Length: 289
Image (cartoon, rainbow, N blue to C red; front, top):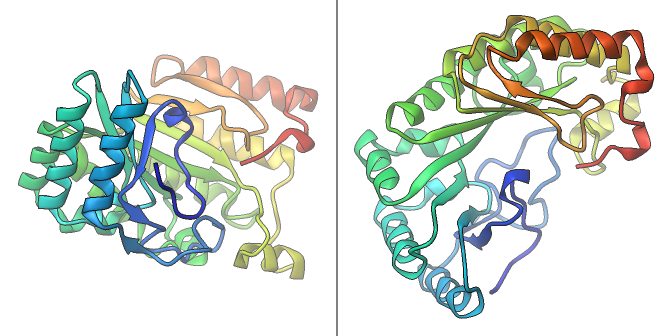
């Protein structure tokens, strides 16, 4: 197996076979993100990708899941993605799912027929970053897409039978946009009704524009009570039946997990308990990415 540069994957893909089909991220200008900064976005040669799958078959006796890295596998030609998925199915008949990251841009260039074909060939879920439902926050953080476009592309994925996992980041709007960020992010989740919702809590990484803004005082981070306030505002407004909600990433102060809308009351009660007792939160020194 050959890997170029740092390789990232969602927490739920910890036990997956990871093969790079692209290098880096096709956008890679988000102000809060330090991923893939050491490499330019590029399509990996198809022959190398297929060689890696054949090598993996020789090495691993059982491969249940495959994750196609790096940041935006869906930008490849549909015909090449078909070959990749056909190869996975041929070499690993035991594999039950293939997943990848996706961006609004890469979803937009895929026709609905192409997306359905990808699903039929084994691409069962994509991970997409919403980050915020507020256009003010998205513009500030240089996301490159307004909320309405992100929502539309999420709906497109789901309409074509591919499961959708969407993440957002608590604290991304700072104190000034706390309420708008929470309310509009909940509205975006509700409109997409994804299979999975993941919430991270903002951490500042050196080498990003956000790092510079925090250190020059132009961006203020939320304190723990404000993080809980924003989380409660979000949870109160979520209406996404069937969505599995997870806020158990290493960056989170408070761990929440449940399925909407049935577990919503219990998660709100957990937030309220933490608001009255901050000792229930993960210590700052324990947080990570």
